[in-house]
Image (tube, rainbow, N blue to C red; front, side, top):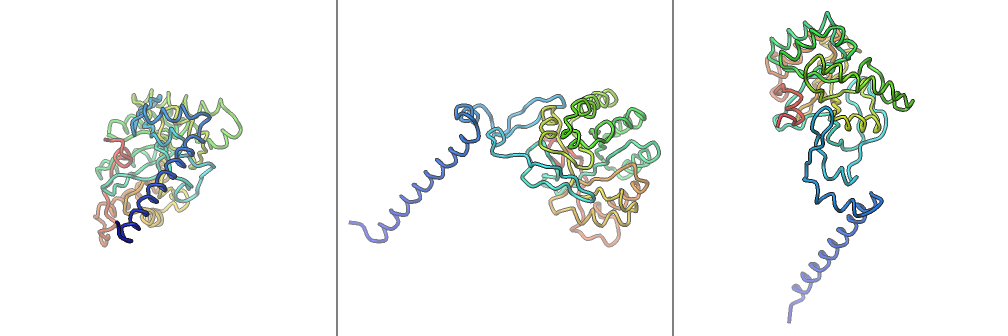
Length: 305
């Protein structure tokens, strides 16, 4: 015979097993409901590794099994924001980045809208003096007008990403079904930029942070990783480095951040110098908690592995 205590433990074990079975059946039903037939879904975990590469025009991208099953969905809507971070209301998928995921608390500096013939060379001089590698998201109409500046970016080890041809709001273009403009702003612009840099375009930043699901999928099919930001992009409003840097630092979490700024703003050089002084711990009175390594975008999002 068994004791009352042993009977209780046996009953709990049976109940736990039943609950687990119900949960597994429920999960399987959710997966099956996400596709027209179960066969295509059930074959996916067998055919895909946890991180299988998919080839796009701009390079290899990882396709996670969960995304293939429809279990992780890109957020809907236009996430344009005026002064800080583009709002994303769901977990991003792997081709949408809005923060760092490195283990060393890295901060990546990204610079939009150039090249500017007056400011960008000064920005490059400043980055060189500080030993910083940045990512420039360039407007290709500007890049075509000043290709030597773009070539200098590449020669000095910076990453050059795409910021459309003429800084169009792509969500609006998509909603208007203006496919010719969409191709010109993305596909044709990428070809032009690659002709200048001699390198494949891997990264894309949408003007105004405006990107909906249709645009994201269009970019993903072309092998482009969408890089948002989680602090910065306040320089067009303040136009003064002393006012721009505090909100940037406020937006940098302990895990690091992707900083957004513009080389079309006259304050860009002072903003970089001030921000780097804090992050590198050189500015008097800097808290140790504010010190972060300044890394490349590739390191920040794990593309250098």
